[in-house]
Length: 335
Image (tube, rainbow, N blue to C red; front, side, top):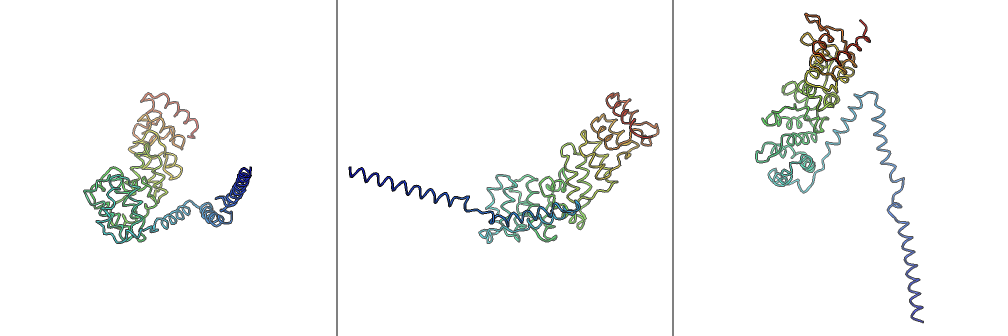
């Protein structure tokens, strides 16, 4: 019986200790360690940034704020002290496993840990070493990643010169500005344009815009992204791009953007034909609908000798649906 009483006492003692421990854990749980006061400074900082962006008066000011913030962010140096004393050859050997993955994200992430002063030597070695087999798009991303960490125009120019000096990187269907936008480096577009103007590389803007207009079906955001990144487009150039889009595309996603935002002439003429007449002649029903929706006039002849209008051309093609669209639109257009 005595033995039994001892067991009861031990059991009660164990239960008391268990309850005490449970109460201690409940008071010092992870949730109890965080208080609102501790988080308020971070929340206040984030709110200030949001307010600055939301209170911008113009789109241009918002873009400048965003661009400046990104430049400051990307210029930060996350260098690893273990890599500071390594030579370029040693760093290249160290990165071989990354090259085998052909992952631009992995390689550019590693570049952040190399001291800024040594980034150009490493990037140059990666681009020019023919033993390193990387796709052109990966090498371009590596160049852009290195350029964005530089604080001076002169240092950035060294990276951009790698593109021009390399035949494999220089050639290709997509212009440099389009590649910069597509790979997430649209904030570098103003720097690339400034570099191109100083080095007489050529009109990179026109090539990029023409490419974007001709490939609007595949990438309908490219024209807008180039414009928002700082590529200047006046109404005359916008009208030329509208002609390019109508001739090469079938969907016309950016027609409204070209006419309403970039102020392209909805009735611009090329080879004695309005863009509407060109779309009708090519049986591009969707393009015709977009042009009519954005102010194209079906009654304009395009100053051609035969004085044909878009309706005449629609009758020649035998497209009844397009004839009905033009007929309905003509009724809503003042003579």
